[in-house]
Length: 413
Image (cartoon, rainbow, N blue to C red; front, side, top):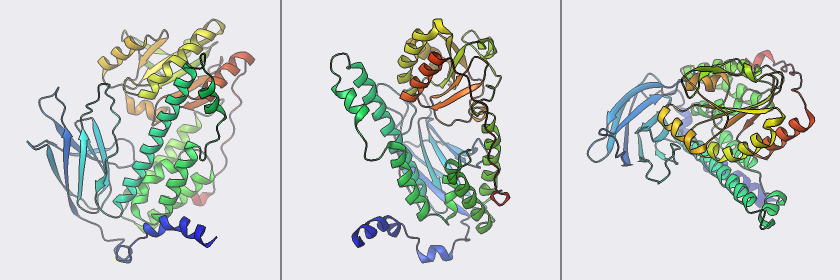
């Protein structure tokens, strides 16, 4: 038993905060230098640029500076600040890196995607910086590994299902195999250890936004309590105060998207540029799919949605796809390639749409009943999406009445 306890405690010991760092916890770094190099530039543009922005935790990041890549593909920024915070480097609008600004940083970035099939999903970039900066490095890596596992598992299921008419061995294994750790559990275990190691550091503000989410839960309570500690311990960390307000605002909006609530009334341009809404679908079951041309999982889900559409269209089922593309030409090209037979709309304000419908990743889908009320929300298209749609069509079920939000202790706010 002693060996087991030692093994579990090792990650925390390895990440233990140096005593000198604890003694300087309120020592705000006034200026730093950011250096980097981009491996591949975009051959289709004359000038390759890099942008630097600061995350204020209120929504859209604030642009701080930009520069043109040097002849050796390097870039340098000087940051003057009244307190450290979270910054993001955008290389060529193709690659990204995030860091904590309490020391000079250096990063090597890939830049342009040289793959035959290009997607604007950045690979992992390690930023060489401070001890606190490693919280962001490890959090980003955890997210990246989780995303890659999601893609792997989805692809395996997709191709196993395609081969099922010839051999059911693969799909049978996929359905019956018990994983050592399910994907989400695996992610949570790693992130929990990391959060425990950095619990009292100001950089924890980076992780609390995703940890809190908007649901009443132990996790939400822990995140809000941790946020209150940061606000008290680091008065200069204005981002913590802003994040608290952002979480409460998002929570209020999320309550409007609960099961049983009416689907928000929105209008977006269609392929011809005419505004179109969702009200006309009342009387039908409707699947609203938020996607983008550059999103691999979104496009992998389209054949599955097509199968449901063809199977249930005559029985009162319809689909509307709402793209958050900012490149209209890319959107039109993807529509042509995918040949989706249902209505296509394009968000005219990606950030507003993502805030209104409370999603940060795509595909995000809402199943709406015949009365225009939300039945289910799906993050990604998985087996449960297909099952619940088929069940609704077979049973003719409606959205459950919305549940009242659980009262939160006043001390949490």
